[in-house]
Image 1: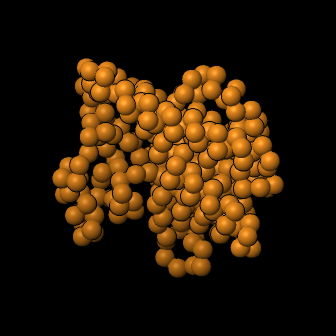
Image 2: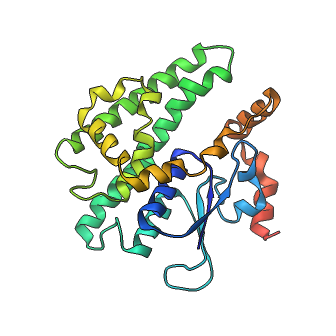
Length: 253
């Protein structure tokens, strides 16, 4: 059994999609990122960067004690090695997949997250819209550029890493299918190969199931004050604000 510390976000969906694709048994452990669950000492012992998803595999690859892994890309790679699926073992195809996984982790995910912040959340965080202009232009522009990178790759290959569906596609799809939110609702029309791939991946039964896992968790109703607290938790953390919890986690308290 694998415990999945999870909230329904693009990074969370990567893991549930992979688990569904592989047919592995798992249990969802909700991490309410709007309620501060990611800052508890218990969670920080599993995920020291106070980000979900994270997993605890009670029957780990190689045997032994339960194994905790954080960072969605590392989790996908681990599950690929554990099951022998969606991550080739031979070096050339393996690294063809892994380079696109790392591309997503370093590029598409962070740029989409920042574009979403400045374009959609920022207006609730400042009374001066001019403060958002440069950040919006910078990160929306990067999402547009990265969409072109994917479109070019997918013009010559059915999937990001080649001819076979892989963890590279699972890592990237949850962010790519939201590109209209970060650019505009017709954005994918400018990238026909990317649009084809988004639609093709969505048709996979395991993707549909994994994408819907925990959907009800994201429908938590919060008061105006609770929503303000949520924004502070998500966007205004510092080292000092979580120092005590980190120290407790490090001591195993």
